[in-house]
Length: 403
Image (cartoon, rainbow, N blue to C red; front, side, top):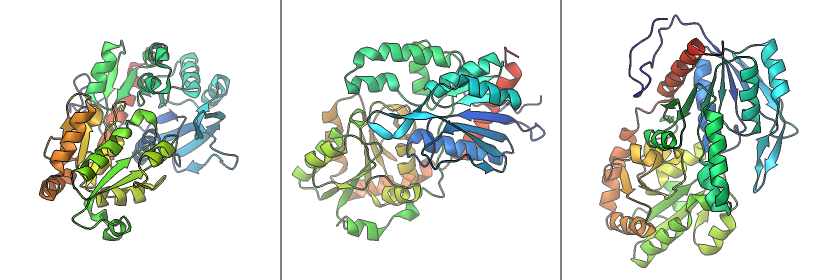
């Protein structure tokens, strides 16, 4: 096979393949998918869409989301729906049920070239076992810090067993894709093998500064002299959202005219509303609505310490909105301090608030950073990310030790 020797990361030197390579049959397994709104579902949708555009045949294996949900057929793209059960505290999301036998039957009848597992639940484990029986090459994604989240739900003792399960899961695949170099380093220290950095992309045609809406700002009662603070994502305890409220009140007490907008929903919403009745809660938003929200705000507050990536950082920057975040996950790799946003070292909430107070002293500072934010992420195109995944799939097919 003729390869283009374009560096992709420090381990794998293949990024692009010559166009004479045959299309692949790729089975993608996931327990979340649009219209569910979360970073995993939306990212995976974009990647599958772009792999399909590259003429690969995609078999999407996902959960049936409701009784009316039916498997759809697209050009070069088919669906296989599996059973699931609601996740406690998140009834709108489901966890897959064991499906090893069904997957063996399906893949025996129509064998994929490679199986890619995006989530590590029972459906993902079943796919891993079925692929091993059929000697199919398998790759995976590491997208959610389940072992870190356990600390926020009173089951910190369970973090080590979860980490052990995830290590066992991913080390049985040929490659595990992680979104940042820092996460790769962290997982390597925990004993994870065969990690490859594949970043997330952003649709800069959808997320861009032109979506800024004075009408929306008027609805928030925010004129040009008012600073709109925005928080986007699932409203849950592990997202450190109390710090968003503390930052808002600190700015108000300093005499700054500010508005606070929460976009998203989740089990922590009622507590946030009781702690900050002045805040605006939009609930769940479409991607188009989010692009307008990002562009119409002045500063994204992103205090989470449990992300594997944090799509909101990338989306906000694409919309020209600077980000204030701790120096971790995607923020540490995307934010150029004081150029397109600000990074807070360590995990001290007081430092975060003090940095926000410093930023908000002058609207001119926000304006200067805003001018560069969109430009700084224009290169993060989904086509590039899909090409990186394609390269890993091809190598997995060629080097499959089970074949």
